[in-house]
Length: 434
Image (cartoon, rainbow, N blue to C red; front, side, top):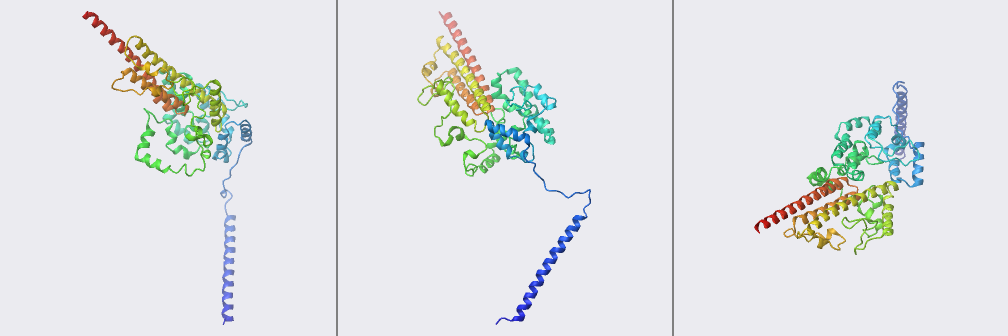
């Protein structure tokens, strides 16, 4: 049976405990208010940080870009960046004066004069130099100016005095790495400017790879690099779709919408086949087909880039493709000339009617003359040139492609002269024996 007295005592104890808890909370609140009231006026309490949001100037830029479909991917990146949240808008970076030291230097070294901005606002500069970033990131800018990166463009100009490449060649082969003198976004990619991305080895790979600066390849093959690569193995699995990735992968451009036509949008190549697309049956595309194929590829590029930028980039690669074709023709002409002079060469017979040189030049190194081996190597280097150019890799376009291509042409010229000299000596020896 329930004891009424015991139940009453329990209730009283519980009620007293509740009253004690309430009294403790009230007295603690009063103490807190009293403490806050005694804070000196010259020592303000710290307020929570606020984010200022998008500026009116930036909204005008965004509206124009969205209406015209220009670089909308970059706008989306910026909207999700710390810059946007803190009110650092388009005008902070893209509007500047020619009197600023960093801008003046870029103008004097012809970095900013290479291409005018298409924006209707004449104040806007398409290119942003490191000095712009230094206005806010002063410590980082001064540290950068102490580094070798801050001399990249000047070193390129000094080198160009001796090798004098064409402007198209320089754009595809040299500037994309050496413009780091003016471009913080070489590492902190537009327009998120993520410090995390800049810390990855891939941020360095574009420039620090190839024959004479193969730091990335060396690192990747080390144990440190192997462990780093292994940690990235789940990146595609954890990504819902290729389209949601910030940067394209192979299938983004070559298999859009899940298409299994890996030749989608290709308009030129391979080198040695002339400036036209050739299908799997060896048929060349006519002008109308080429125009459509290029339009198809631009439709992919324009998902992220402005139409002007995408078109110009592909046209620059086209120019490099043609230059590589010209080198092959010159080398082939040298070898054909030797054949006409009576030298025993099979190269002209091998390539007669062939649409793809690379498929015909699989030489037997024991029987093929040295000059034909040199030609086969030259064609391979020409392939590296155009593949590097169309994939926007300056290290492979220049260091592993164009530079080796020029060396190969020089070797062919030297070998042709040696063959002619030997033939002349042999002719004279035979003449004396008679």
